Length: 177
Image (cartoon, rainbow, N blue to C red; front, side, top):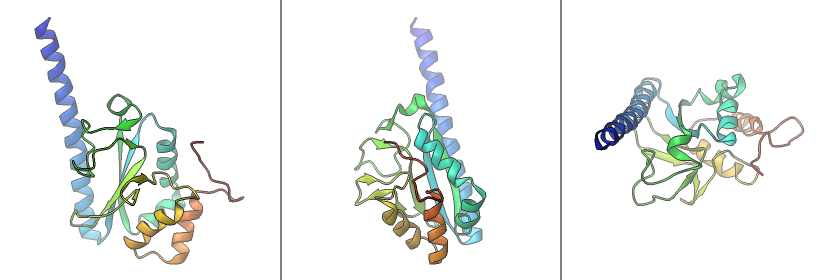
């Protein structure tokens, strides 16, 4: 019995470490590419069980969004499995990119921007607490402020990014409410 539990815990630990290492490798590769291309790195944490995360990933993979966004960012999407997160990331989860001191549950999606040296230059948190995640009309200005501060986008490009979150009638493409 104890041997089985030990083997099971070992397998979970190995899988957990592999996931952390895989994410670290993705980020390191993105930083290398960003240095070569003089860009920032946009790291987007998504949950495999979150509808808003799936919508964010789908939107960011559209041709129009990619064409604009990828001119200033190397994008890394990191999907955290339902088993690791349920609905939230907590302090026992490897996704602690925002530091040990601010270890509160995080709703998905959440994202941050690194300069090409690996320094944090923007996060999806307004005033360090409210997560923008998938930008809504209410917090679009905060989202665009981060993008504006970490890119050289023109007002036209910022408008294209903003409009990507809405349909032709000005309705938000996704809302969790």
